[in-house]
Image (cartoon, rainbow, N blue to C red):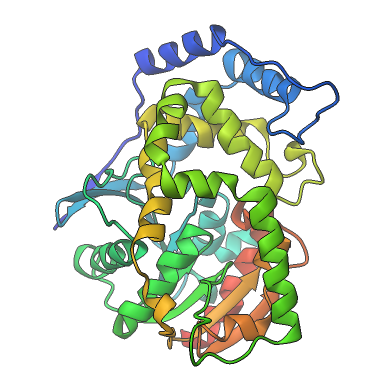
Length: 382
């Protein structure tokens, strides 16, 4: 298996079609004074779409994305897109970093240079990494699986082959958040011989069945918080986990519908205080949305939720990750579990950090402190 350089180049006709669809949007009504209570606020979305139509420069964003070395390779019949940048230091540690939903590999654009060239960003050259940042299968420029049952386990197996067989890294480190945290955790579980250690910004839910240790007071409080979050916030997850295909017709056909679905989550899950642009620029929000639009991958990205719900996962059977683990939790309350909760899934937690700032999308919101935590965790393994 040999990777080939890949240049991101969305046809002008596709961008013209996007702008035409934006101009012909049929807007819904809205409750007076509803704000964001009922979902994406109409006034803000109109403002964002107006910027998308008249000021957003996709060519400039494409140039930014192509400033990284992009590649594609076919592994076991699946085409995988990834960025691969060699570190600038005396001995770089190979590190694969995995994004989540509703993000793309673009979520990592701030932290890649910092991990690769620490000296240029106030760090020690000895902390350099060879960074591999793939697009999850069915996201962006990675091929969408067409068969049932594509779980995080299969993605972890794909990543192991990418790192070892394609890139020649027999031992490597791994980091991930959200869906990427699940994939990273499974790398540690399924391929421990290849994994130096894992670093995650979210923990995989533990086994709580027969024979498990009773919950502590802190854990019970956390479970109650999760249940409240699921009642108020998890409608998206329920429909994506049960009927993603039904939802996909609207999101794949309407760029405004797609932006509404994604941007609402960036606002709800970030540390933005209700103003999404306190955490992300319009260009960042729209680059991510445009990647989903141009590649028509919102449907395949959502199917991950269906597969996770309908296919048993190893952690549901009480299996633990035994490789060294660093846990770095964001300020998003539902991500901020007690340590004893994490210890039910990870048996060798060497670092447990509560970030002082940065919501669910830490790589975009607080890249500096996230990178520092990654450096600190992996330093003893160099």
